[in-house]
Length: 459
Image 1 (cartoon, helix red, strand yellow):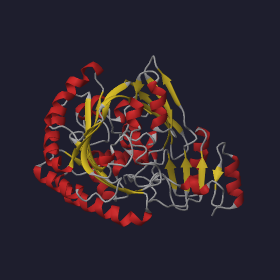
Image 2 (tube, rainbow, N blue to C red):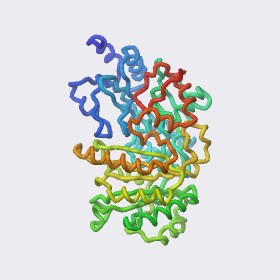
Image 3 (spheres, rainbow, N blue to C red):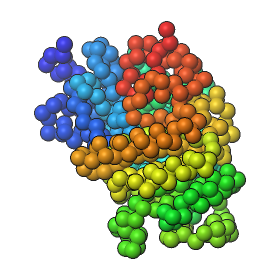
Image 4 (tube, one colour):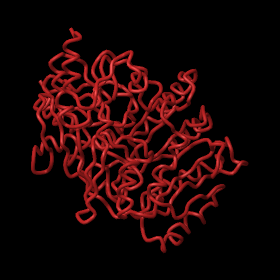
């Protein structure tokens, strides 16, 4: 049982500070990106450095507390916070160090991708990440990392060189190809199961000005566009990326007023080849069927990365359902159209993220990410600011997913999963699951780090 003396001693050991219920910052500090998550931790340790993390891990283990790790707090299932336990909050550990000569980037465990994008852009570099700049670096990386640069440079984990971590026993270690190689294999897709990642060392890629943005077509063109897209993206060069989406046009610029609130299909493009060749690359795209709206053009990479931040501010209600997809059949397209016509709210959407190209040329066994042979990571998300819409958006996402799941490859991208149980986790890791469970036993045999898409230690 915790007592005031125990808590006081813990507080004194932290440089960053300790937050309890009743403290002025408690309500803000316990919130995560998904407003559907409403959990009340007993303690929140704001960790300023590695020493704070070590103290927090040791305290949580010794006091037998439920422990959650918060990086950016962006996780779909709200797994960066827990009820009645200890949250290890890494948000104060927000730093980015770019070495432009070596083209490497050192990033703190509490950084957001907008921080990385800002720092690397000055040197004409980028680290492959996601599509929302407020996403945390740690969570996205540990789950794999898909986004605009996936087809050209691979997943985020394919550009990860090393991770510094605090283990369940309080030890501080480095995981890389040369040190603790088994741990390095596990953290490249295995999530937060193996320790608290305090820093990441990435390989940076030459990226500065993209040629990208959204093209939108009317919903009556969606079947034709999906059939065209499935063939086009399979043969597209690695430097051309485009994810397919159903969404409702938001009522603000740069969208024209005559399209406000219309349900449409679209492709959000990112071309990272030579800008002088961009018009030629996009000529066959534009000539196939003229879009109702074409906002594609030269755009700074950080601007494209943050394009949807306004549409998805923190605190909205989110319900996610996802699968990996190898083929997009006519039957699957028919189901997509059925549910796209029922988009329940302005922010609710479906995305098909291509994961072919460079990402597909890594073996399934090279990292825990076991669907390198899939073509897309598919996600349906019900989103709305009003808690009263929770049932409506959740039901739509579940029913949509159930209709499409028979056409899927099986598992799902872990960063798109809610708390869905062990069977879904096993399906996601496939043949890599048993190896992960053995590594979990070595580094966290008591399963201290279990507020995640949990991989139980092997027996």
